[in-house]
Structures are given as structure tokens and as C-alpha cells.
Image (cartoon, rainbow, N blue to C red):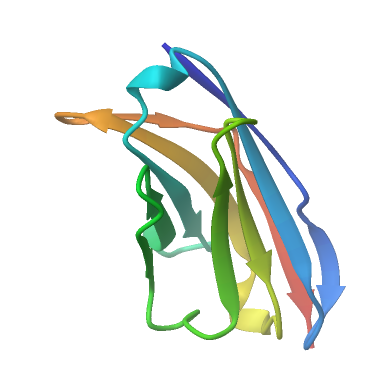
Length: 116
């Protein structure tokens, strides 16, 4: 079992920045990759960014160049630095940890609201 705790969401004006954190505990040795999804009201959950155990990163095209994902393996924590935020980035952001097969663990979600 892996437990994920997120922090760092909030309200920010367009053009501003936020940094999300996600700390993992439990069977962290089993984690292969971590990252973030988001879900806006009335929309499907979408992948925002991911990072492998080897620090290979991937991003949704809508956030590339604005968001940066990083990982501190010693702290079992993944970060999402979000710059130049836009109103369309408003969503609940969920941290995930992939352990292989079809198994993902999820955080409780943190709200990000970007005002215009």
C-alpha cells in the first residue's frame, strides 16, 4: 500500500504561480512513476505530467513550457511547479503513484483556482 498526501493548491490570479507537493509513504519501494492528473468541472480527468524513477518526464501539450515536474527520491516527494497559470488550469489536481500492472494509488486531490 502507498499513501499519498498533496499540498500546495489555492487561489491565484492569471499569470501567477503555484507549487504542488505530493509525499508518498508506505511501500514506496514499489513506485515506478509518479505524477499529476487534473479534473475540471464537467470534464474528464486528464494527465498533466509524469516522472519516472529514472527522472524521465512527460507533459500534456497544454502545460508544456509552463509546468515543471520534479522528484526528490530521498523524501519520496514529487513536485509540480506551475507558472504562468491560466483560468483553464482551474481544476482539482490529483497526485498518482504507479506501481506496475494496472495499479495506481491516488491522493485526495487539491483545488487549484486561477482567476482572470
